[in-house]
Amino acid sequence: MYDNVRSAHLERAHQLAPASILYRRQRYDFDPSLAEGLDLHQGGLIVSAITILRSDLSMVEVNEPLMRQSVARTAALVAVARGAARLRGRELRLTAYAIENRDPFGQVGRAAVRARARAVLDRAAGRYVARRLDRVAFGTAAAERLYDSVLGEELSRARRTVVPALSAPCGCVADGGPGEGRVLFLGALTDRKGVPLLLEAWPEVVARRPDARLTVVGSGPLQPAVVDLASREPSVQLLVGPPRAQVHALLRASSLLVLLSQRTPTWREQVGLPIVEALAHGCPVVTTTETGMARWLTDHGHDVLAPDAPASEVAAVVVAALDRRRPPESVLADLPRTDGRLDADAWLSASG
Image (cartoon, rainbow, N blue to C red):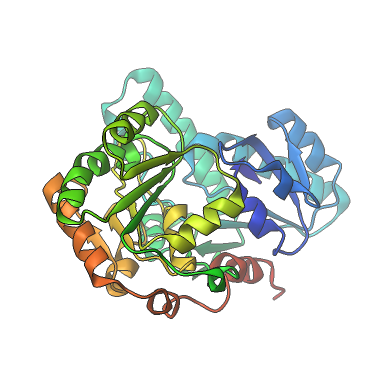
């Protein structure tokens, strides 16, 4: 069960054990061509509940209990799945893959009465789901620490493991190496992805490294700001909605990925899919401590900044990373030989 589905989910689904995928909506980067051959079912709560009732389920992987925007729906579908299993006299295993990096109820006390009431219901739904999970695989150590502090008692009966949310080296990495001075931003063009900080820092990067080139891949409310900088700065290029093959080519060709994640009152970077994809293509990363992968990245030679670092510091770190010229082979050597999400799926679905 997914709240939303994106291209990376579809790519991975082709490698996972065959399963039906129930989801509510498609993300901006959903590539329909990747859906071919997959059993996808889009719909709201009622449609998903009917699909579950018609299915002879043995295992369901649900959205994690701290994904607050979907937790009420998840709780309802868990209840439906358990009821259907009881009616058929079948065993049902409930599992979850967890990467949340922020307590969604941490600031509830300051909210209005209606918001606090909704928070109480959402918290109860999260506890309901957590108590009924048989297995949980955490994608980061930060996620495991968060769940211990928020839902430790509710998860006491569940089996658990930590499988770092890292991809194996992409099969396309042999198709070419990075170009000199090429920096890539990949993601939604929003404040929380650090776009304003990157745009502010970029002129200083070019002043120090005239050969530097920035490719921005994505769309969102800050797209006009990127267009404006690109109109004044020839080193900046914007690509909106390129096909996945081109995204892979850009990742291979880039010397550095920059994703300056910023926390908001309702969001914190869990992992950062662009980070995972960059690593899988041998591309070094500059990011902030807001990602749940911050400790791993620091330990493996990538650059991790404070989210409030000034633009001058960002520029200095980007230039230093470009000057370092870390070879792709060095980045790839730190990755697992198999995809961490696939390993987590194998553990969640294993017998015994």
